[in-house]
Image 1 (cartoon, rainbow over the protein chains, first blue to last red):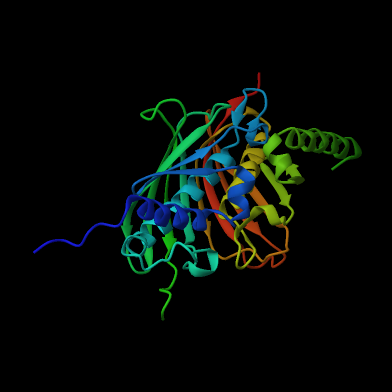
Image 2 (image 1 turned 90 degrees about the vertical axis):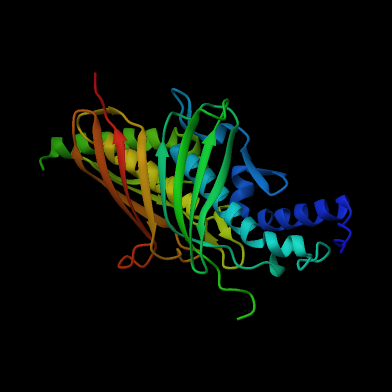
Length: 170
Length: 147
């Protein structure tokens, strides 16, 4: 028995990229902070390019702790939504031509979020990646790590719990 | 409080207000210091469309509420008579309900215990419905003693 011929690479990439774009664009707060997302397969990395308005302590200077919290929370929510959508993206159930906000399930809601500030955020770009540790029908637990120059020297990490959106069809 | 005491409080409030205004991110979020005394602080953040996290409902992103809670917690520590500087060690936020779109959010933080190096802080955030908080937070902050 032979497996079905895999979809052409362009189609696979287009499907994945347009789904990720649809999740991110249209959220004003993500645009306000200037957060961008890079994708390698299913792995998503968030980047927070440095801007003056992200500074909390002008004397050091250091990134605002609230910016770091927000960056981690945005990354956790996008990763959680992304992993939730992945099967439908891969199966082609989500049509890349028509995908936009209105065709996506609602975003998960944050129940609680705990940030651990490990060192002060330097005035330069920051990166973050999240890992979904448990995703049930209703609740999910997500861990997220942020770093600046060295992947192994985290400057902050967080764990959050989220309420999953109800499934699209009842 | 005598007249002189009230004057000192007012001066301190003025300095604190300028201090918050000098934080670029606090300014970007339009934060205003409402109260600042002896280990407590209150900060107001006006509703703004750029802070929306859920485009369908217009509800502000949790991250913006975190930024408000963090700033307010830090301000509460700074209002403590012994504090010379502070940084967040950890902050946990519970989101109890969505903030009502169009309404400003107010955070009130209280520094309920300080040791030589650490300040413990509790905070709540409310919108116009004062009885039902939007979020509550607890955090630990560093306490750098005044020199």
